[in-house]
Image 1 (cartoon, rainbow, N blue to C red):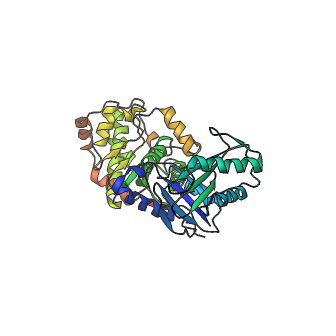
Image 2: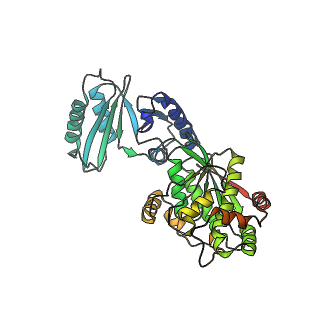
Image 3: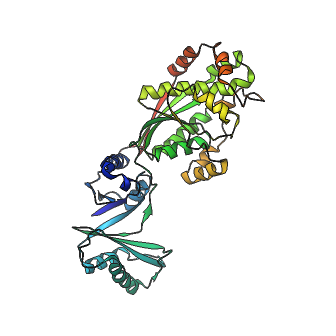
Length: 390
């Protein structure tokens, strides 16, 4: 029998509300391992113990646990009797054939009534491993960490300790809609808000068939990647070309980009309300492009009917690119495509738009009808992880 031993950090600080976060984490684990039948789950102090089925490999368990927001670290533990000799024997069996050149023992003694304290267990098991294998001890940078947990009724040992993504379980902070392009920034913004416990739906604006379908395909690939962190996602594809044509035909050239973004906010707000979401998420970074000056972002936000979260607002491009690489979305984001916001963009867009100026221009448009038309022609795509049941 094996257990996933997940360790909290931020969740452990939630006091009397911790149970809400742990319950959400349990639901998320069930969803992410939906193609396997996980056994009982129980809390043990700042840990969550999850019984793993026999047909679930350690490799798959590690891969999926690494996606679980709320887990700071985790390991795959095997039970042993609360006896030092039994623990030694189990550890030696588990590391047989291991090729590591250095190791350390890391013991956590949750039950202080156990006869040996943590340093004594470390020394005893470490001596047995060194004698049996000849591997050297390295307490700072070991190739192999052997974990031992002494709980009130059972002990666990694990070979290897792995990093989780931390943060809060997806869903515990509510539901929002993220505007996702085919670019670098918006997937990073979505990831950062999911890590704060928001469950996201996604909306992508495209100008197909005036432009190629590449941005739609990229958006779907990016959302599929992000869906690994929340098991299920809705992607709404909004046709934007006709709306852009009307803006180009009737509006002053410098205001086009700001007007595009204001219509996106209106449409995304309507979609969010329809789905029960209570906020929007964008990948804007202050000063990065013409639409992201303080004045323009202020005017654009005024078209939204819900709060707008901008988790990248204080980050520069290099920081965002670094996070996109770590997240695994960068290579998809840089595939060439034709984004809708590049269509009919003027050579000198307005960078300091004023509300009265923009509203006066919009008074010449049938704003509600244009929004309703785009909403009526939107497509919904449902994505899930794992993609198919076994």
